[in-house]
Image 1 (cartoon, helix red, strand yellow):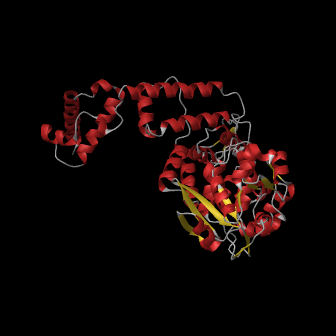
Image 2 (cartoon, rainbow, N blue to C red):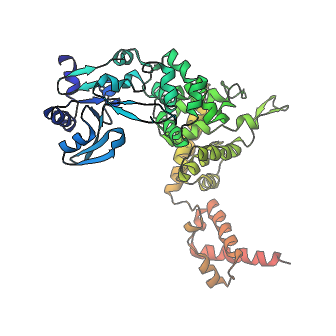
Image 3 (cartoon, rainbow, N blue to C red):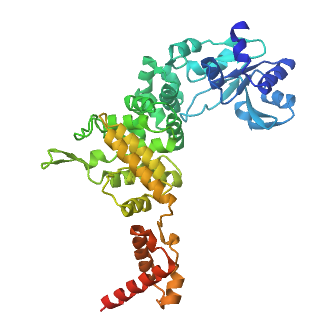
Length: 462
């Protein structure tokens, strides 16, 4: 008890209360999985899962508010003071014919038998918070101390059962900053494992990508995906960058640069997905210039946005997520210099939108920092653009027709301009006018400019 007393102190009172209620009714309760792993690592636990030798119907009789969330798998949800706690009966599992879920479960009474069905040793530890016993039949604590991700039992069996475990191993190696046990990693890339992996839904792949993006160095997860062959299944386009040499501005090939950019990005999942995909079209656009005696990648940002849209759709990202990430890829190249006028800065803001600009600065910074050379000047240029753009926005820059101090119906009423495309054309021209000179955004000036534009248009007509 003394060895785990400091862990029990961190267990929420309601979780401890669930285990005590089970004990009072002649049953046992253990906290299991990620919450025990996090407690042992000295990290805050996120989710609290309780395993018990009580059957689901017994658990439902013991608590006042219970939801039968998964009776066929032995899981009920206990509600205490508005918080949901999953309580699951100890179980063994049958075959995994779909590569994701067991065909059948069998309730058992032995906590060690329940832990044997789990994926990795660090997740196969149980703690009885009532009597203070730590149950660790597979050496999970030892692997925690050694910072190793190791499959429970025979790794080929674990990955043959559930293909998602391959991605989870890659993710844990990044988020926990652990190495993958060599036998475990070999099993991840074996043909049988990859056959099972192909049955994993695109939504599950997407979720593991996003969880991996929260790591300090997400590249660790994606390197593991590359080594084991799962990235070739989920996103082969990225592998085109492996060995694709760049120009003199880069120290790494496209893949190495993307991994460096990914790690240099701010820890926001969607921004990091944009970092992962920002140069996806470089291998397909690479050409050698005789003039510069170096490689060029013309339009890689445009083609990359199209490729990103296809990849993200395949992985079931939402339309909003897909559009935002594709826009970041499309506009990630920022070639700012001091020669830009205020009008040029306003046009850049208008093109990328004020909403996207903060993420673009962040992506551009990670992009240049991922080049592997001195990028002080480029970093400073991006910062100067950010300062100028922020200042111009604060001053009320007109970025679209909605910002003009005149409306199309006023042009028709005041100047007699007939309805039709000409109204939109004049409004667009007014936006360009006030982009260069914000002082022109006054009603009388806009009316005068509109009349001038309309007269010029009529004179040019045959």
